[in-house]
Amino acid sequence: MPSPSPRANWRRPVPSLLRLLVTWVVNCAGLAVAAAAIAPISYGDRLGTLLLASAILGLVNFAVRPLVILLTLPVLILTLGLGLVAVNALMLWLTSRIVSGFHVGGFWSTVGGAIVIWLVNLVLRPWARRGATERRRRQAGA
Image (tube, rainbow, N blue to C red; front, top):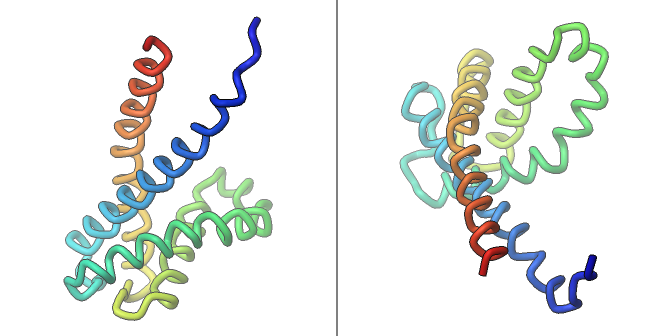
């Protein structure tokens, strides 16, 4: 089996950047749907606040969420994973504390927002992955 050429390695950051961009767009969609569906969640109808909040949510999910999951692992095991809703709500609440102009309201609206964002991710992520898989197949065939 031939080894990949050194030139093939320069392409690797592009899928990572594309995945980051897709995550950002999906977070934007999730936050927008959550704000439309749950009245206490708002971003002040400012696109900049929505974009910033979705970027911060992505960073919080990347940096803080794994640590919180590790620390709450016994509870997550006892609740058969349902405790992840609370972890996701905590990440949404933390995002609202960091981004001025983005508000999530009380506990139940934050939990509801976390569920709505999860549902939007559930719907949009496979669509985004399917597009990336098709692009890879086309590149491999070319």
